[in-house]
Image 1 (cartoon, rainbow, N blue to C red):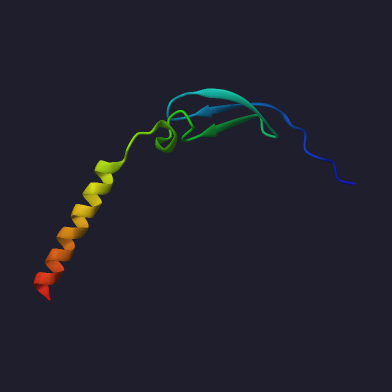
Image 2 (tube, rainbow, N blue to C red):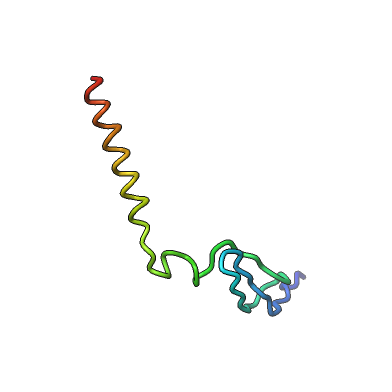
Length: 69
């Protein structure tokens, strides 16, 4: 007969914003890179400039490819 793992209160620590919160887990502590307090999808911070740079770079490469062809 197998036994279920024991759940205990665990501290989760975000390495980006140093936020900590408590949850239940089988581990003693958990370290995450990004949490809901600092993740751009949850905070509403736009990443548009980075995407615009990628689009502009793609357009420049496409224009050079047309000239070369």
